[in-house]
Structures are given as C-alpha cells and as structure tokens.
Amino acid sequence: MITFKPTVVQGSLLVLCLTAVFVYSLSFTDPYIVPKWLFVILITLGMGLYVSIRILLRKPVVMDLPLVGISIVGICCLQALYGLLQYFDVFSSNSVYPITGSFDNPAGFAITLSAGFPFIGFLIQKSNHKYIQYLGWTIGIILLAAVFLSGSRAGIVSIVAICTIFFYSRFICKGIWNYLLSGGLILLLVCSYWMKKDSADGRMLIWQCGINMVKDSPWIGHGVGCFEAHYMDYQAEYFELHGQQSRFAMLADNVKQPFNEYLGVLLNFGIIGLLVLAAIIFLLFYCYEMNVTNEKRIALYALISIGIFSLFSYPFTYPFTWIIVFLSVFIITKEYIKDFLAVEWRRNMIGVLVLGCSVIGAYKLVERIQAELEWGKISKLALCGSYNKALPSYGKLKKTFADNPYFLYNYAAVLLEDKQYEESLQVALECRQYWADYDLELIIGENYQQLNKNDLAEKYYISASMMCPCRFVPLYQLYELYKEVGNREEAFLIAKKIQKKPTKVNSVFIKRIKSKIMKELEFSGNKNRKHEI
Image 1 (spheres, rainbow, N blue to C red):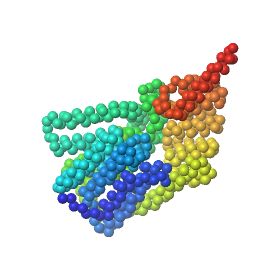
Image 2 (cartoon, rainbow, N blue to C red):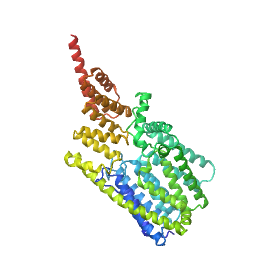
Image 3 (cartoon, rainbow, N blue to C red):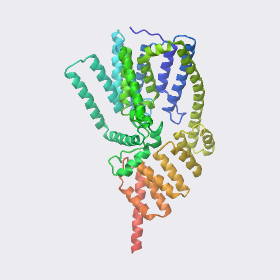
Image 4 (cartoon, helix red, strand yellow):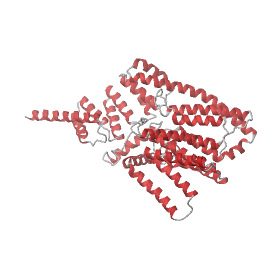
C-alpha cells in the first residue's frame, strides 16, 4: 500500500508545481510564461531558505517521493481536463489553437502532460489496491487523449515513445511484437511529418540555418542568447544566397526558438557544451544502473520523455520542465547526494551557500517582480495613447531592463508612436545588439525614413524582407520610401513585385495593400498613355 507522509518540502513542491502550470496574470506584459517563472523562482528560494536552515541545524529533510509523484499526476490530470474542456468549447482557448490549457500555445500544454505522464507509474506499480491502479490507467488515457487532441507532434511522439518503452519492458520480451512496436513508432514519426508538412519543413529551414551558425563557432558556440541575437540574420543570408523563390520562402517566419534543445546547446556552448551534456547523461545512466528501483525507472522515463520532446520543440522555456528534470535527477542520484552530505563540513558549506543565495536571490527577485509589474502597467497606458504618463517610467525602467530585448523593443515602439524618432532609433539600435528580429528591422527602418536617412531606411527594409520573404509590409514600406524620394523606377519594380507576390494568409491588411498598389499602377499606366498621346 502507498503510505503518505506529508512534509513542508512536499507541500512546497505541490505549490511549486501548481504555480509552474496554472499561474497566469494580465498584470505582466507576458501573462503566460513570465509570472510562472517569477513565482516559481520565488517559491524555490523560499524552499532553499527552509532546507538550508534545517541542514545547518542538523535536522533531516524528509520527502515522500511516491506522494510527490502522485501530486504531479494530479496536477497533470487537472491540466489535461482543462484542455479537454477547451476542446469541447466549455472554456475558451487562449489562442487560435483549440487546446492550450493554461499556456499560450499547445507546446507548454503538451510538455506538461508528457513530462508528468511517467509518474502515473506511482499509481500503477506502487499500489496493491486495484482501484488505485484503475485510477492510474484512467488518468493515463486522459493524458494521452489530451496530448493527441492538442495536435502537438512533439508531445504525441514523446508520450507514445514512453508507452512503447513501458510495454516493451513490462509485457513483451520477444517475438513479432518487438518489431511491431518499433515499426509503429517509426510510422508515427512519418505521420507526424505529414500531419503538418509545412510546419515540419519550416523547422528544417530553422535547423539548416542553425547549422550554418554552428559552423561559424563550432567548439565554444556563440554564447547564451545567441539564437535571438543572430538567427534571423542567418535566415536573411540564406534567402540572399538561395533567392526568395526557395521552397522555404513561404514557410519562413519571425523565429525566436531553434525548435531543438540540443541544437540550442550547440549554438550557445558549441561541441564542448554538447560533450558536457552527453557526459551528464552518461553519469545519470550509470547512477541508474547501479541500483535500479521503481522510483528511478519512473524518473528515467520522465527524462527520456523530455529528451524526446526536446528534439522537436522548446520544453525548457517552461518552468515545469525544469522542476521535473531536477526532481528526476534527484531521484536517480539521491544515494550519492546523501553520501556527499554525510560529511559535516560539506553539509555545512552547502547549507551556508544555499542560505546566502536564497536571501540575495529573494531580494533581487522582489525587485524584478516590481519592475515587471510596473512595465505591465505602463505598457497598458501606452496602448491607450497616454505617452506622457508612460514614457518617463519607461526611461526609469530602462536601467533594470538594459539587456532585455523585449523591453527595449517595446520602449522603441512607444517612442516611435510618439514621434520621438531620434530617441526611438537609439533604443532600437541598442535592442539590435541583443535581438535580430523582423519587426525590429521595420522599426529601425521607419525611424531612419522619418529622419530622412533614406539609404539606411532602405537597408533595414530590405533586411526585413529577406528575413521573412513571405511578408508584404517590408516591400510596401520600400514602395512608399521610393515614392517619397522620387525614385519612380524602383517604386514601379516593387509595386509589380507586390502585385505578383503569392499570399500566405489573405488578410484584410494584405488585400488593402494589393488593392492600393493595383489602383496606383493603373493610374500610373493611364498617366503614361496620356503623356504619349
């Protein structure tokens, strides 16, 4: 039977997981991810403070792992039910997708369920009570159904892979079933590609441009944050080299993630970083093999699930993934951690270190939360057109967010709306050091155009067009720029290009652009004919 021994640590872990999954606040500029991270870190620092004091007082830190696992299953079940109710229109989704749960897209929803799915093993394998086992199987089916209906291919592949490994190790030892399971998994990968072929091809473009980045610094990488800082420049270079008639041209988008965490490690830290990661994985498998238990098996399955998801998406954007990873690593290595802390001076050193980091971290984090809340407040004022009230606060917050590209972009956009072109350009160029972004290129280009620096405006409009060849706005801005400076020949060429350009999403805005271009081309044609007569 499962025994329950609730402690402060388990209660804190429960609150931590609930926060990582369900917290949402419109008081922040990003209501879905930022509040989750801020409050997860705050709770973690509180836990660190509690644990470090107990360590220094030589009191044991007790944690009932089965109870923790069952709590995670319960949270995932609630999230899955929330997603299913969205699918059946009982609750509204947070975006155009039918299922997002308490996240802004299906990726966060799917990784939550995929990472928590293996912990159902605490209900199925640990309990001798058949009704608890039935409950475990039922929750497993609910989680599977929710992931499939979400349409997240990374989630589907990872959760099916875990089911395959489970059935392979538990029920099937030999024979044709082994080949059927392996073949089924390969078939699923093929079907996942054809399920959303354009999206899959788009990721292939991202990976191809990412590999080009790796070639420029293969051993030590480009540093943390390099993808956002440089990727879109490489995508623009790709289309400059291969032309905008490339099969990827209609699929290219304004990309902020590499859609592969291993490629992300390679970009940030190079081959050396990837080798370090491989060494850590090897050590975890070694610790697992030294003493295989049911708890360790569940933890290993959770890490495998996240590892598979990481091949196709960005699970480490979400705090719940980190919680599951650290918990799983702790479960696999807990004997070694216990042996390490058995030596008094080591235990005291860790206790003092954690205590100091928790106190300093809490102080810094409270400051950051206040700044984020203030940013959320003034961004709403700016949206209402209250620039006189918002801009002084933006100037003050710039010290806190000096290296935050999202804040700098937002600040530059507000200054542009208020027609403070010099100031907007200065902030936008600061932002450009941290962020290569399609929308940022347009802001810089527009600022230069308003300041009559037309050559530079042209450069940034062309750059934006190369970053996302399927977009109409950069071409339209170029058209207006050439008209303004009286370059009728270039304006005509751009107008013809807009006229012939295929439409990816036939929005009202694009229809207006094309309609205006058509009228101006017709007017220009009639004017030329009259001139000839």
